[in-house]
Picture 1 (tube, rainbow, N blue to C red):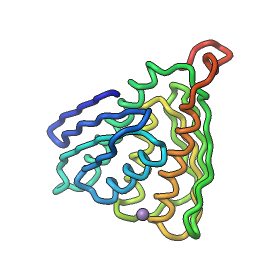
Picture 2: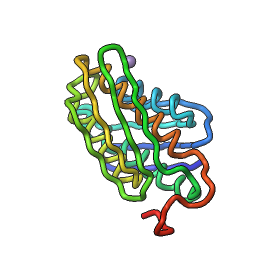
Picture 3: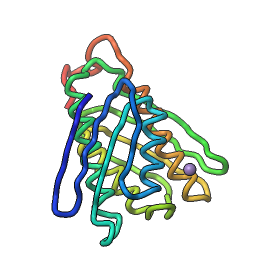
Amino acid sequence: MVKVERKTKEVEVIAKLNLDGGEIEIDTGIGFLDHMLTTFAFHSEMGLELKAKGDLNVDEHHTVEDVAIVLGKAFRKMLEERKNIRRFGSSIVPMDESVAICGVDISGRGYFVLEGELGDAGIRGENVIHFLDTFCRNSGINVYLEVKGANAHHKIESAFKALALSLREALKSSEGLKSTKGKID
Ligand SMILES: [Mn+2]
C-alpha cells in the first residue's frame, strides 16, 4: 500500500492505493469523478481510498487535475516496487451503444493518446481528457484510448472500465523484466 498526499492553495488530496485489492472509498466532492474512480478501482481490482477537497467554487478543473496527479504518483510509487510485470495490457469494453478500446504500456514514459470525442457528462469532456493525460504523465504509463458512441456518460464510463481492465492485465506478474534493453524508462 502506498499513501500520497498533496496540498496546494487550491486542492488537498490524500490517496491510499493498494494494487492487490482492498477498500474502495472515494470522495472528491465531484459525484461523477467519484463514480468513475470507484468503477476504475473496482474493475482493476485495486484498493483505493481517495479524499479531495478542492475549490469547486472556481470550477472542477483544479480538483480533477490534482486528483490525477496524486493517483498518478501513487501508481509510480507502487511500480517502483513491482518490476516483474507483464507490462502490456489491452481491452475492449462496450456499454450499450458506446465502446472503448484501450491499450496500455507500463513503460515508465507517460503518454496519453485519445481517438474519438468524449463529450460532457458529469464533468466536462475536456477535464476527463486532462485527468487521463495528467494521470499518464505522473504515473509513467502509456495509454492509447479509442472511444466511439453517442452517450457521453457511456463513453467516459466505458473508457475508465477499459483502462481498469488493461491495467489489471499489465500489472500481472511475469517472469523477469519485460524489456529487451533491461530497463523500464
Ligand atoms: Mn454510470
